[in-house]
Image (cartoon, rainbow, N blue to C red):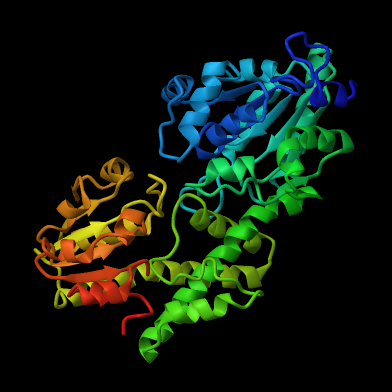
Length: 471
């Protein structure tokens, strides 16, 4: 068997590679899957000096990326991508066999959506990526999983890899060393480029000394900046990302549960959260009461962890995450109820101005968006919803074409009986309440994100409703 270090660390026998101190030195990298995670990772690896090939089954997506264009909104990513496509350091293909032949290190960045009819994660795209990659390999390789998967997936895939390598040896006489490790991602949409180039930690699970050496060479720049590298076993690496998301989701649902107490008691949850945040054991981040979490990661990840914990008979985690999820989903109804109350109990034929469709600012992602869910819920109750989002309008329209879409904040607010702030874009949080009052029918605002200056809006003549600070 060939030593993995001879190919996965530095493929020194390949004439195409530059000297170690030149751009393009080191292992050649493929990134399988070019969504938010994969496109960002591919561009970042090129920025770190590597020759990179991204691969995806979607020809339209690959054609767009090959022209230096991203098919979604992510600050800072498109110029980075375009620069390295232009330099030739970054290229894209739909041919997994081509990518297998190209690379030494293969990053798995495919999606693991929630399985239809279940809370379980759907790992078939990860399985297909590994099987397709194995079929095309002609030299030793390091496979690095970044996709968020249920604990135990990596060990199962190691069995798939071992069987495939043994079959290739018998069938073709081709002796390969293929190692699988797990390197979970911790990207935040809206900050994905910085999170990749300057991560707060790097986790590597199940790596041999040779594989760890390879990954230390790939991540040399952030490691030199002081980013800690945590090495561990495969199950721990698989659990880190979902556990982090579950903890953040728990903080959000905790403060939203306390916000209900604040509303009942006449307290201000924002001041309460500030006071809690001074406790170094707790911290202030993710203690903003409001509409709750959404997007493509937190909801599916806590449900997938709940499902896997149940399979493992770890029932305390199941109970906790069930409550977290239920509190989060109830926040959407709370905001709908506030809009109903502001309109006298019914929104039928009332005009509702909605500011925000994305699940959070700095993204056009509307997957499981609480904002869009509330807007759709009000529409189903007979409201005339006029929605504006600076980036996510087109994506929202594809999901809910029956809503009305504005091209500006003022257009969304014009003639509104109540104005809802559902995504905390800076242009909403810094808006002039006096100017907006001039265009609405009734100066009533529901601040579902706790992002407005309540005193400032009230001074401008607005009736203000918040969550946990409705005093």
